[in-house]
Amino acid sequence: MFSIFIAIRPNYRRYIPYNAGNSNGKMNTRVYIQILSQLLEEFKRDGITLCQDVDSAYKSNTVKDWAKENRFSLITLPGLSPDFSILESMAHPIKKKFHAQKATESTALERFIKVFEEELNMEAILNIYQSFTIRLHNCRRAQGQMTKY
Image: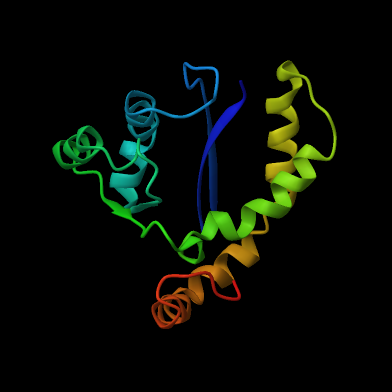
């Protein structure tokens, strides 16, 4: 199964292919810590906080303990509001383009990289980051539900 973890911020994008170790592709805590380990040095050096959703693998006590022990800064978003996830705002068009053409498992990563690098609009990501405060207020007014974003 084809699985990729993505981290984005203004002028930065990174993907980490991973094997979930199961047939449904669901990441577990062990795999997530392996991914975080690959980001650790760079994120600590650059003072980056990873903003994550509430996936069960992400919010486990094992991950929290690992992050604390390794001084890896994490923020977990509320579960009902995809508006807070910048990646979710960008992901749908990219997923649609990726899935528009069939790819074998052996060519899927190559195809993903091409779509990811060509279609992930860094200017749009910067605009989303810059409007984040407005998003927070809109989501608060909508009591955590989806807004126009």
